[in-house]
Image (cartoon, helix red, strand yellow):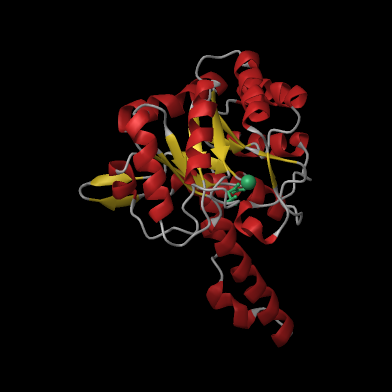
Length: 293
Ligand code: SPV
Ligand code: MG
């Protein structure tokens, strides 16, 4: 139920200190995130939460990640996921759009049982951060983005819902000082968490940000998306002061080469037999999907 799900992220953050989230872009990937479990060190290990990525939600629809997929469609994806899962949802809200629109988005997300929306401090035509400075991307001003955060916090009706401010200064090569200034300003404007992003393989700029941010703020949760800087283990991120680790696109990236290869093999052989060895039997897929609720 939305009320229980919405509050579960905050409860997990309080209890565990570090929460992991895996990308889900439809009911099936939601079920995979919900049910994947490994047994390690005498215990069951699972993802804590789900990330509804703008990149993967758009990619699943064959569209670019430029805020083209409208909110009604993004909400439909959330509903597909919430119908078959229970884990808390972190929603990628892109730039949040116009402040006048963002306040409505906040209310809708609360009703859907989403725990956290992350909005990024960019304006104009949003492009995916992994393009960095290879494409034109404009960072919003501290004042204007702080106003959006304040309006969102004022609009929300439930106490647990979280608004996370995502800082694009390192992506847009604006420097560490700019990133830190924004982080403190956005927390002062009411952000419940901050996300710092980087597209470098080397994690040192994220380490530096965490160290400097934690010197002045020991409480505000910090969210990371280690797609490029993927060598650091969750345990080390926790020691360095991070609180949410999002695996933002790995399920989508595992899917695309597999389906491309299956399509190619069948086309080449004029039949499906050669492809069979790479396919999961349908009876196993059916088992992923519960008969009853
Ligand atoms: C997404 O998953 O859509 C994100 C994270 O925003 S990133 O693609 O790294 O910008
Ligand atoms: Mg995104």
